[in-house]
Structures are given as structure tokens and as C-alpha cells.
Amino acid sequence: MRPGRIVSLQVKDLDLSASLLSGQAFRWNLDAGWYCGFIGDAPVRLRMRGDELEAEWFGEGGDKDAIEAVRAYLDLDRDYAAIREQAAQRLPVLRRAMEFSGGLRVLKQEPWETLVSFIISACNNVPRISRIVRGLCGDGRTFPSPADLVKAGEGSLRGLGLGFRAPYVVSTARMLESGELDLESLRNLPTREARMRLMSAPGVGGKVADCVLLYGLQKYDAVPVDVWIKRIMEGLLFEGRRMSAEGLRAWAVGNFGPYPGIIQACLFHYARSTRLRDLQTTCAPNTLSI
Image (tube, rainbow, N blue to C red; front, side, top):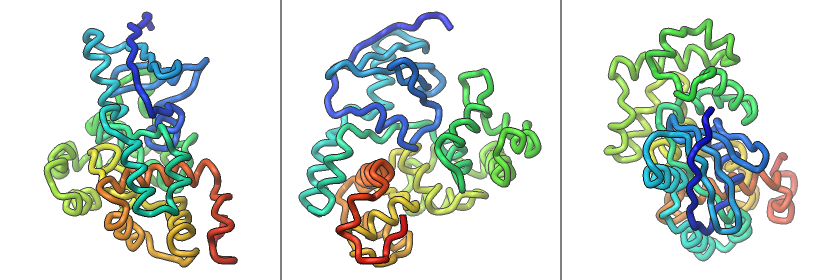
């Protein structure tokens, strides 16, 4: 690959590791101090030097285009510090998690790649999801289109490690190819309705739908609830009492403030990074299994 153009941005409140490697996206890796991945179809390398973000851009366009793409992808124009502080003031029990998650950004990803990635995420872990997604892309930088995955077929996808998820991905790709499901149109729908449309696709339950809404369609009132979020919310907010995922999601939307999806991302990062060790003094005895 030819050398890219390096552009610089002055930023505050950005942790690249927390933002890029925390399970939101699956085409980033750390190599010799650079975070290497893709913004859309453009290869890019990112690194921090103090409050300066350096981006080596391999995509089309000039420096201004590169800066705008990086700013948008990392959501750099939103005041995350204020969002976290507001949540901590509303619910002081969240303060430690909010402070721990300083610099975390919710990435603005392409919705089709996000949908496929989170269908693959079922019963899976981040390193393996990343390997499968890289396998789907092969040697290219373009994420395969719905037509590409329909043409590849279930057998080929199983060979890449998708296993039982392969028919879900192919069937969902067919829905997009036929126009039965239009991801971009979901941006204009209320979150609840968009969620139901997504859940009509094979392999898309509530948690996957919420991940696509939050990370791919920038609906910040979407709150994915997985095992980590379930445990930390039960421990911090409900004294270890068992709650349903849907009940926790509804509670978060009603109580986390105007950006519950961002607060969820901070809690997920905190819970996964600390493995909930700080909850031991908060949870009721024998109610939380780690």
C-alpha cells in the first residue's frame, strides 16, 4: 500500500483503545503504536500524541475530506464529558464507571457492516468475530455487499467460521438485496419501530437490533443489553436483583438521560475491563455470578 497522507486534529476526551477495541467495531487492530482499520472503505491509521490525534489516511479526497471523515467516525463534535457528568449527577452510583470510561466514543459506523458483524457476534467473542469479519473482506478493503454474501452462499460462509450464523447472514442479505429491508430508511423512523423492522431479519434479536441502531444508525436511545450490561446494572442499580433484559433496557431509556446508549457503552467498557470486581461490595451476597 502506498504511503497515506497524515493529518492532525486537536482533540480532548478521546481514548482510541476504549473506542476502537471495545467491541463496537471489528476491523481495528493495534500495530506498532498505530490503530489500523477502516472508516467506510478507506484504510486509516490513528494514534494519539498528547491532545493531538494523528491520522494517516489512505482514502480518496484531500486533507479536509480526511479530517471530516475522522471527526465524524469518532463523533468528536459531541461533548461526551458533559454526557457522562450528567449521568453521574442523575445517578451517583454510576460515577466510577463514567470516570473510568473517559475518552470512550461511540463510533459512527456503516449500518450494513454493523448488522452483519453483530449477527456474527451471537455466542462469540471479540477476537473471533474480528477474524471472521476479516475473512469476509478477504484481501480487499470493501466490506462485502448483500449481493456478494448471497452469491457466496451458506457453505462458503460456514467455511469462514460463521457456523450456525451463516444462514442468518445470507437470509438477511437477501432481504436487503430485494428491498424488503432498507437500513437507511430506518434512520427516519422512531427507534421502537426501527427496532421491530430490524428484528424481522433472521438472527436479529433485541440486543443485535439495538447494537445496529446505536453503532450503525446513531440512535442514542437504543440500549443493547448483553450479559455484561445485565450484570452491572443489576449490581449497581438493583442490589443484585435479577432483572429481564427488556426491563433493564426500558429502565435505562427512562433514567439514563438523553443519551442512554452512550451511557450503556461506558458501562459495558467498565464492566468488561474490570470484570465487575468493583461490584463485589455493591451486590447482594450470592446474587451475581462472574
